[in-house]
Image (cartoon, rainbow, N blue to C red; front, side, top):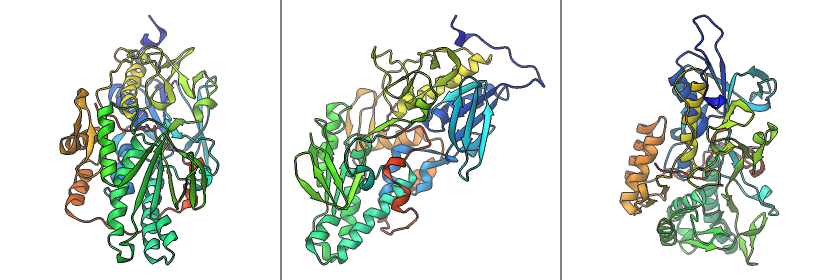
Length: 452
């Protein structure tokens, strides 16, 4: 029997309890911590370390950026959902696998260190940067609430400044928005923001003759290349109906202060470049010093690190073998992260004498793409849907997947359907506070929402 599945004796009353540390509270980490608390029930000390005090529901971030949802709706407090765990607010600076310790730095510069008997590494992912000149300086990522709030203010500001600009070229540039990356995030953002900015511009008579222009760029053959072609066609149709210029097989060659140069040689005057190219594993994974596969920690199907059965990794941080596609790791999606988090909790609990461990196997059960309004694309259990049925499935999936705030989210959706959105700048986040090169999410991120 593998060492991972051997049960440890249950500690007697009054004995020192084993210490389980979960690093990262995104989809994988939050699910793992919740499962551990439910399974162990006081048989271990559970500590969760994260840069934020909440679980961030990333799939609905585009709706925050366009004002459909209030920001706190997608932020679920850890203290409420992980009762019984010790929540440490900080950024992990070092993991010593020999001494079995985790060191962190808190938001005000303080430091701390904690020993562990079992470690769940679920730090997730960060923005993927490509060697494109000017992108780090002039583009903005889209991986957290600060980025979403900044982008919302930025979109509103561009329309307001365009309305008072006397130069037609400046008006056109401020009403031109470029999104790079036609995966989940880029597609959802372009689809929803195109409607948002068009509605804003319609309030200003001076912009009556200035079209609001959105471009969606990607080197792929089609939008949402990782999904069923039927879903891709649905999303493509909705984008084009909303006036988005869908440009496949081209991208940004150089980003400039008020323009982008495309790989086709065309220069587009714009003040907005949203970078949604994708994600890469958090650099902390490489710092641990264990074997990695393209930045993800190598683990077995039991999620344990070879040679270190006390460490499990899950979500975007782990290269979990996909037994449904031999030779490939599981995709970096919320669907896999959530299920791997649940398995991590089960296997850690089994190693501490509670229950039995298992290995990971999961077939994708479908995907959902929220396009705003009554438009969406979904294929639950392989059944392709579009329009209102897809919207019902998509929103139902999101409500079921969120660990809290469901009534508040549903109420915001209802109000958005009945009332016009408020197009005002809040000024809570400045551009200097969300540079692309440091826009690293504290939660276990995903490349997009996944149903099932």
